[in-house]
Image (tube, rainbow, N blue to C red; front, side):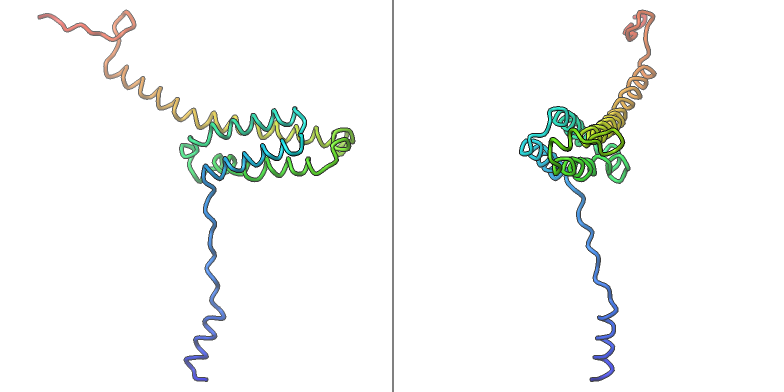
Length: 171
């Protein structure tokens, strides 16, 4: 064994393998996660009060997805939308659905709250948060509309009647 072979072996032993970062979930991945959540509700015959809240959250996420880039792909809001669809929502439901239904709906687990009430509170929080994020995404377009309207007003002005001044002046 020569110095060169020793050098190669010692270098390869100390080199760390490259860490591969998984790709960010796509819009299709997020929709697939929401479909799995819907299937989970159906398979486990979840209470209507849970189903309605989950449907509201899913609807809001679906409305937000096309506007996610307006929030900034690396923003906290974008992350929250993705995490809610792929992690927070499924985990909350799985935790609840693993419990026996009668026990989960009648036995207090957190002070006077049953597992059902704890889940409902969590779903309400997720729903309100997703609504706020959708509002933020829509506000960007609303602000652009206001800015454009003000530009047009400054560019073309208004007559005393409230409409644009279309008089041509004296011939």
